[in-house]
Image (tube, rainbow, N blue to C red):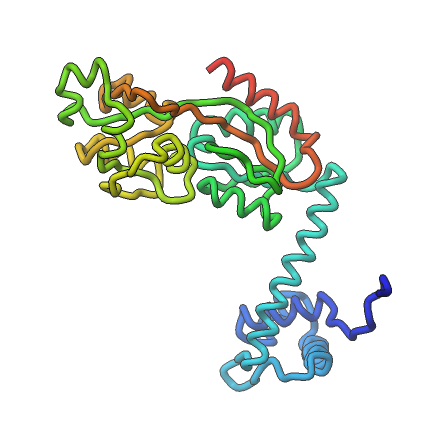
Length: 306
């Protein structure tokens, strides 16, 4: 098979951008104004696009431009093409050491370790913009695979085989309850704790599927049968609030509950026979993030001291 593509009359990116902008703003006049194109030129450009696609993409009327059925398909694909074109530019610039640094981190790392990393990044790469999002571990992996992020941070088990990673530190999950919980009021449990079987049989307050905390807990208790959760919540803060209110027991990172334990809002219950240590990892897809290595070293140093 030849390495050359067969000739196809492809729409140009400017025409696709016009198509999407008309759809978003609702009229050709608004789109042409937003894009800085004279309206007659925009009209000709849209007509040329329709000829290349072989369909009418808008029904134009007094109330504006409404996409046809074929137009809606074209608009959806045009958005993907424009996103891919933007991604191409960003990835090439990033590989050359230019462009923004896009970071996505799971909640525990985002809340407790990212300030260290971002401060180091600003010092090491002054003038280089950075974007930062918070996802659960599954969301971080998805963002990297879809090229929405350059670097991710996760807690939990092994990194998927299609991604690269390095360990930046470790932490532990700890079992916590409110001071009014029966376990907290039982001196023998407060001193000797509960074993894996007791923990597995307890209806716990847990994070959502896809979170690193939930993944580590499930791995630690396997293959024991596990009770249905008392609650499933989507943030560490929500879990802490529920536990402090007396709703039950949860396992959370020692980083997350340190202040609550210190100030007496929560009580730590020892857990016997379960490995609740987990790795904190930086994860990426593609070449090693060399320009970020100084900031990663700073983060590893901070977790080692902690």
